[in-house]
Structures are given as structure tokens and as C-alpha cells.
Length: 319
Image 1 (cartoon, helix red, strand yellow):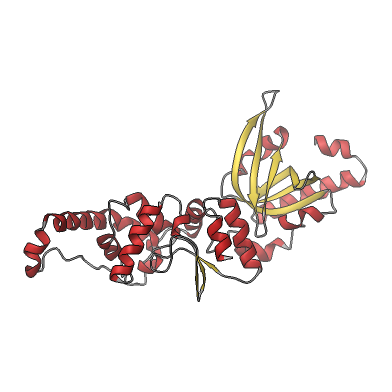
Image 2 (image 1 turned 180 degrees about the vertical axis):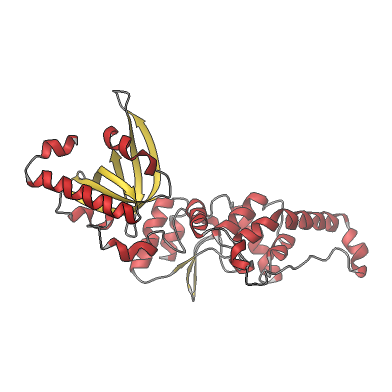
């Protein structure tokens, strides 16, 4: 599976499928780590470590420079140590921000704490690298000048307040890794899904009911203007088992437009269309996944099913 993941690097959808298969097989896929990851995905005793080359905005040259510095001087001890030892001509601020946000530097402290310090750490590291290149470090080394400050994060009672909200960190992972890796937004809601969800996305192909209720996260939403100049939407959504495209026709979109935002967690009532190889979903209603949303989607689902029971399918399709 490590080889499969490495072969799929650069294709987020394929990586997501492979990671889901790893989880099904009981194989841990771990976040990237500047002290353990390689350019490709790598097998470790703890599990499969995410490849640094698969992190968005982190190019092959930057990764190779980082690995060279790690092999030459051992594991990085802090953000300061990392910036002081890698070639900053190959790894700029954007690269380091992406490494921090993706979780590759988590052993150095909370991500927000590192991002807040990054400018000053880079300024110091860049100055010292320039000094080394000009020979000034050698001239003043005996006096203790030019030594890289090794600032480590020391946990304190208020340290959690210095990090980003969990939702924001998951959004960073999704953006930079292409998947929710450390935790899926639906994990915390899993106990409540039994109250309302009738099928997961992996089971859509065998869905017997015309109407289904799913819990999902919006990963992409694009608007479309019809020939009649009405606004509709095509949304890509995912749950813990897979992903699917949902078509939201104008009348439904008009009623539900505010909820179709990227990373929003939704409950969606939809009709299943078994076409070609992959089933498609036609949205009947959508709400945010909260207490009020659960009650609303149940009510709407009951109304739609009553129409089906009366055989009034035409009215259902134009409701």
C-alpha cells in the first residue's frame, strides 16, 4: 500500500481512495513529519508515513534539501533548528507554512504558535546563512556569535489557546494533503448519524430506496446557470466511506443556497439515480448537521416519502 500511495502522488482523489482502503485494512496512514517522512510515502513501524512530496506547495527540491540536512545533522529539534539547517534558497516561507499547516512540524509545538513565530525565525536563519556564506560566522564563532537559537515549545496551562481551532486545522490538512488525515469532521458526529442517516456513500450502488439521507462534507461546489438563466449547483461531497457528486436543481438550490460552502458538514436528502457505473444523487433538501437540521431533514424526508407512498412521483420530482 505504501507503493500504491507513492504511485498516486499528485492525484488527491486517488490518494483519498488508497487511504480509505488502508483504513479498511487496518493500516495506519500517518501525517507528514519532517523527521520521519521521505519524498514518497514511507513504511515505518508506526504505519505508513505521508510523503513530503505529496504536500501541496512543497516541491521536490525543497524536500530533497530537507532530507539532506536531516541526514547530515540528525533529527530537527525545533522550528529554529529546521530553518537554520535547511537551504532556504530551496525552501521558502510558503514551503515552511505548508509543512507547519499540514502537521509535518507538530512535534515542535502548536501550529498557530509556529506560524506566529515563522517570520522572526526565518529572518534570523536567513541572516545567519548569509553570514556563513560571507565567512563572518567563522570570524566571530569563538565569541559565541552566529549560533542558531534552538527555541523549543514548552507546554503551559494556556498552550491550547495558542493553536488554531480544530476545524481550521482540518481545513488546512484537506487543502494541503487532499484529504482529512488526522481526523474526519464526521468522526465526532458518527454516534448521531444512526438517528437520521439511511445509507453511506459506499452503499449507494445497492440502495433500494428512491430517497436516501446522507451525512457528508462539501469538498467542492460549483454554480451553473441554466438555459432559463436560473442558478443551480453541482457539489462534490464525501463521507467516511467515499465521495459522490450531488446535483442541486434551481428550486432546491434557491431554498438551500446558504449551506453549500466548502468544508460544511451537511445532512442531505436526495434521490438516487443508478446511471452508468457510478450512482448520482439529485438533492431534495439539505441542512447543516446540527440538532435543528436533524429535525428538519426528518420532517422533509417524511413528507417526500408520503408523496412516494401515494404514487405521486411527478409531484415529488417538481416539488
